[in-house]
Image (tube, rainbow, N blue to C red; front, side, top):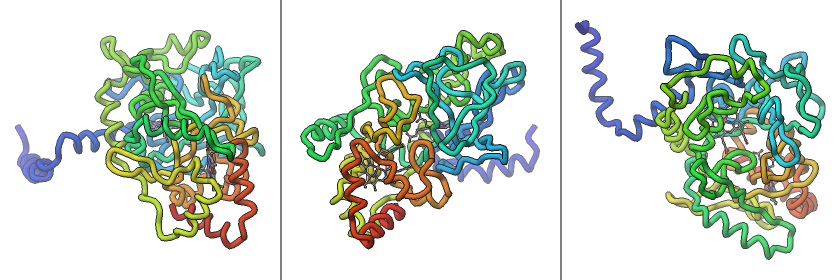
Length: 395
Ligand code: HEC
Ligand code: HEC
């Protein structure tokens, strides 16, 4: 029998709940799932288990704090102590390491050894304490930081045809800017435009979320049905560990994935382009906007993300080491610049591995297809350069 107070609470809650539609409710639940800490199987809270056996963090929010890009923290001994950065493994063609798989997992369930830890160095990041022997002789390491997750719903509404057309039109340019679509095959076997991740390798938010469950949390989904996550055939203790059992279904149901997608799709980016039109004019005049497109068409109006969602070769200074099949290690998706002010205010680094501390550092690292724009930036009069930087840091 319900106690009187519980009745009262139910009555008070009713009028508040009534106006919430199904879509909004999905979003609220999605937000809670994004923050949920998953636990190893078997557990009494069956719905929450299946974490690992190898994993990097227990929740999405552990790496994507407040959905923002936040600084990577290190201990006094140089070991990375925050979850905001991952190390990827691949050979030159993007094939994973035969023992460690695609990503280094720095944590594991009881009875399974974590793969190692990440150390900060002068040049970037390196591996320490590899638990399963050496990496394959041709395997390279690459560091990726967790990006901001604001505005992704809008990026998803840009028509694939519009992205492909920008790439086709670039063929006639004389400034060295090319840019190509990262065509990927989705879980259903269809050819799609990749748009999420530093390498634009995920075609949809759903595919990106399922990949995060696979690589970062070790949880299976419809798109990645095997429960062992990134454990390889050579990691036998990992394969023998208890996995989440869902009567043959994946550890993460399609419902959970779609609610997290609904939540992420609703989080807008800060709407860009403030008063500094002189700054924007120089940005366009010197060729930054050839890749960082101020506006793309979207289903709900212009998407002012300052990206073309294409892959560009930015040259050897930005060789990321590890890569993905079909993408060179020097190729990156044009980073969207909306929300840059937030990233800078948080003190997070710029570029895929966060090595640039300021916008000037970031520009300095541009080479390859962006060499011409960089040269033009450097030859701008001081005052104009300052206006351009002020414009970018206001986004
Ligand atoms: C261990 C840290 C970590 C965890 C945990 C994590 N992520 Fe990420 N996330 C990253 C990194 C690093 C990237 C960049 C990956 C890449 O480019 O391949 C990323 C990229 C993304 C992107 C693409 C953003 C863009 O700009 O294209 C989305 C969406 C995302 N994560 C959602 C999630 C969700 C949902 C979860 C939980 C299921 C999650 N992440 C868990 C580190 C993490
Ligand atoms: C040929 C295409 C291209 C051109 C031209 C270009 N960029 Fe970029 N830009 C990129 C790519 C690709 C990245 C992501 C690189 C990475 O993550 O390592 C990037 C990253 C950035 C970043 C870091 C963003 C972040 O979130 O970390 C800034 C700032 C930036 N560009 C500013 C500029 C400015 C200013 C210009 C003009 C002087 C310019 N870019 C010209 C392709 C381009």
